[in-house]
Image (cartoon, rainbow, N blue to C red; front, side):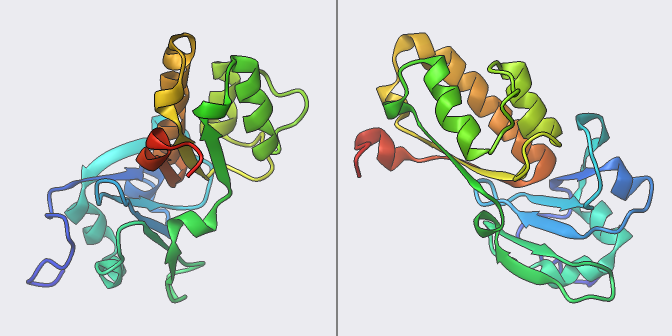
Length: 199
């Protein structure tokens, strides 16, 4: 590593990766610089599960592969990918790489309506369950929806929620966050929509 630390986070910053990278030596091919907290994620493209997730110091990942130093200037909200260590990194907005799932709570009055609007955006199969466990299977575990994960989740109109949907909406957002932590993508709650759902 270089004498001057080039990243916007300190060397001991907690960083998201997997045991495949840290223990099994798989090449890091996807890097995410999170927009919300400026955290970093380092992944390889194979199948992963929650049990494979690891939090390690940023300096530990860089020690494994110092070619990652070239990404220290990657802006928050961006990602970089490569096919092999010999290939150059391709950079772009993380949001642009994945399908959007827009959930406007101001237009949802029931749990059934939530699934009506959401499953069609994910192109979920007709047999997809209409419960939180099934949603977690498709958003977090993956292999069900043909277009994702990863997804870019957009939550709007949360102040328009009735009390009967508030607990449900919080559970949905937690699943979306878990999906992003496991698979990449992004999860945003758009405050502007809370003020004016028609903006």
